[in-house]
Image: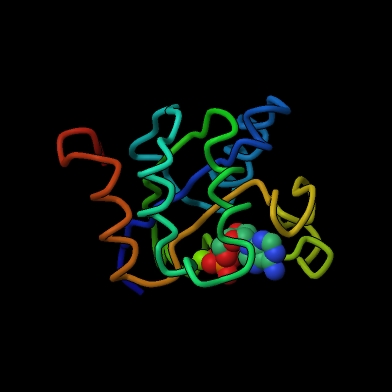
Length: 140
Ligand code: DAT
Ligand code: MG
C-alpha cells in the first residue's frame, strides 16, 4: 500500500465540545500524520460546494447549516493507505453502527452531527484537499 493523503474535517460538534485534541490523538495513534491543519469557519458557498454530491438528498440543507454553525478544523492526513485507514478510524456514518474504538463510536452525537469527515477515494481526496489547502500549506 502506498503513502497517501486524505482530507479530514473535525466538524462543529467537535470544536464546540473542545474535543479536537482527543480526536487528533486517535488519528495519530492510528499512524496517520497531520501534515496540514487549520481552524476556519466555512462559508455557506464552501459547504454547498464541498457536499454538492449530496445536494438532492433530503438532509442537504440541514447538513450545510450544521457545517457552518461553528468553527471546523480542516486537515490533510498522510500515511500508508491513509484514505481507507482514516475511514476505518472514523467508523460508520451512523455512530450507532460504528465499531468500538472508532472516533464516531466514541464521540459522534448523531448521524448528522458525527464529528468528522474523511475522503472516500483517491480522486475525492485530491479535490477536497485542493478546495481548502494550497500546496505550500502542506508540510509532509
Ligand atoms: P460520510 O460522512 O460517512 O462519508 P456521507 O458521505 O454518506 O457519509 O454523508 C455525508 C454527511 O451527511 C454525513 O457525515 C452526515 C450527513 N448525513 C448522511 N446521511 C444522513 C442522514 N440519513 N441524515 C442526516 N444526515 C446525514
Ligand atoms: Mg462521504
